[in-house]
Structures are given as structure tokens and as C-alpha cells.
Length: 247
Image (tube, rainbow, N blue to C red; front, top):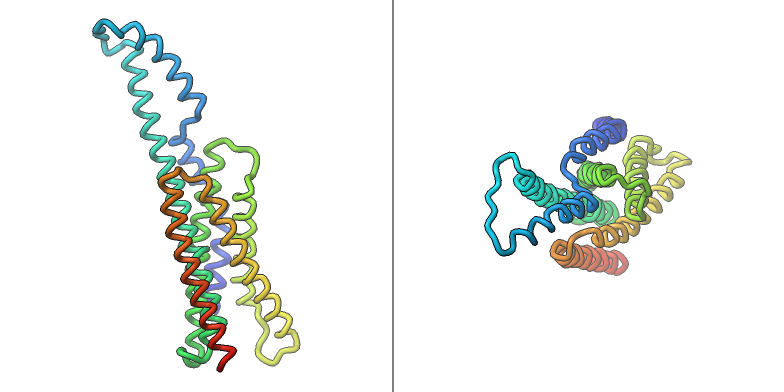
């Protein structure tokens, strides 16, 4: 129990520094729309002049420099799209898959098919793994926002920060849970369950909200993949809930 608590505290402590470091590196890779437009305006007159003739330029001419800048713009734009895709993928796996699996294990696997405290170990491993990946995704999201020079926090960013904060509280709550039979145990259980179920709802909504920031090709893939994942997890939870009530 001590190890997950220490890991959680370290993640909470270092995550802002990780996000800041990632942001400073990513600022070198994102080109704003205004820069692209200015390059387009500089190249356009030259293209009209060269329409009916062939122009040879020396290595020191501005045309060569503009071509290099345009090539770099395309390369950095591709990197930016790749970073957003990585951010979405990591968050879906961490927040959207591993955390709900941990909730399902805690609710339905206490007796069957697991025995003893095996369910608890799997629950902690699933939640901690999801929190680790989710924290990486959260840091990437902050890096994307800061590198794009966005001053306002979007709805997706606000929900993401809330998810990170309450997920951290959930893991820390595991370290502070009262022993069985303690008078405060029932209040801790109520708190832990309410926050856990609320997190799953907010996580699902925020993942679909974040998909709107993806390009059309990635958006279609993310919606298909996560939609199927939500369907499978929901059907599994429903079947286990029915079985729980029957038995």
C-alpha cells in the first residue's frame, strides 16, 4: 500500500514540471496560422512572375529561403497533429479504459472469479496504471495549449484538470482508508464510490469533447474505437450487475 501512495505523491509533485518541460520543447515545433499566411503572401507574387518563364535563383535568393521555411512549416504541422493523436490515445487508454476496468473489478470481482484480496491488488494496479497514463496525457494536453499560446482554458482542458485532480485524490484516499470496522469506514466508502462513479462519467464526456480537436481522419478512428470500447465496458458492467442481483 505504501508504494502506490509514494508513486502517486511523486506524480502529483512532478507533473507540473513535466508539463512545463514538454511545453518548452514543443514550442519549437508549432507554427501559427499567421506565419503560414505571411509565407503564402510572400511566395504568391513570385509565382505569378514565373508563370511563363523559368527563373534560376542563386543559393542566397529569398525564394530558396521561402521554400525551406514552407517545408519546415509542413513538417512541424505534421508533428503537431502527431502530438495531438498521441495525447488522445494515451488519455483513452489511461482514463477511458484502465480506470473503468478498475471500477468493474472492485464492484463485481470481490468473490467470483477472484478469491481473497486478489481483486484488491488488481484494482490498485489498474487504477494506478490508468492514473500514470492519464497524467502523461494531461501533461501533453497542457504542452499543446501552452505551445499554441492559448491564454483561455477550453472546456476540454478544464475537465481534464478536474479529472486529474480527483483521480489523484482517489488514489491518495486508498492510503488513508480506515480499517474494517472503524466507525468512519462507511463514510469513506460512500465518498470513494461517489467520486469514482462521477469520474467515469466526466472522463467519458471529456474524451468525446476532446475528439473535436482532432483532424477528420483521426476523429473518425477515435470515435469508432472508443465507441466500441464504451459499448463493451457498458455491456460487461450491465451483465455483471444483473448476475449480481440474481445471485
